[in-house]
Image (tube, rainbow, N blue to C red):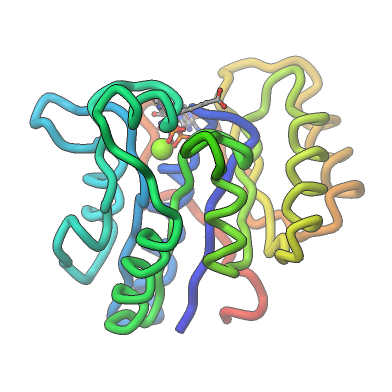
Length: 220
Ligand SMILES: Nc1ncnc2c1ncn2[C@@H]1O[C@H](COP(=O)(O)OP(=O)(O)OP(=O)(O)O)[C@@H](O)[C@H]1O
Ligand SMILES: C[C@H](N)[C@H](N)CCCCCC(=O)O
Ligand SMILES: [Mg+2]
């Protein structure tokens, strides 16, 4: 079973695009691939999670929402606040049980975190605790903008301090015209200590199916 946890340098950096791209790449080699958004905050026009829907569209396995999106919160806020407003307590162990139920029926599971790596899930748990409890290799999406270098290095340090592997990182050109973008990527290539899986061009609108992503070597 292949599993990975997709995190990012921030919210809005392209984690969903990359998670869906990984699902498409995995589906070319494996029969049963499924995405998971353990905690989603914010609803689309259908009252669903835009992220969970995007991951479902890229998955080959259809599962109940209780497994692929166990916590769906209405307010587009930090999950600990959205959960408090909804009267919900986010329990990392329950999220891990949903993941295990998915993993039992899939060849590959791609988990998309909320926000950045240390996003609060409650007063006592963060996204990093969830990644650690899942014990999955992490893929880091770097949204290329001024400030992303420090965010990327801090996130890589946090991932490794949890004893997790940084399986690879993705350079996502979220800005149409960032100055010195190639120099920023070059710096991270030599300082993140993990393979660059993709350099994603700015696209309007972004398309996960045509986004070319290398899979980490251990999954080939
Ligand atoms: N390469 C790109 N080119 C242009 N727009 C992009 C690109 N990647 C992502 N975007 C856009 O940036 C926005 C944020 O992307 P996305 O929703 O994938 O971020 P995220 O990290 O998953 O955010 P969240 O923390 O809410 O889950 C979306 O509107 C998406 O379409
Ligand atoms: C609502 C948004 N799209 C994300 N799902 C949640 C981002 C939370 C960020 C919290 C923070 O680190 O300040
Ligand atoms: Mg997302």
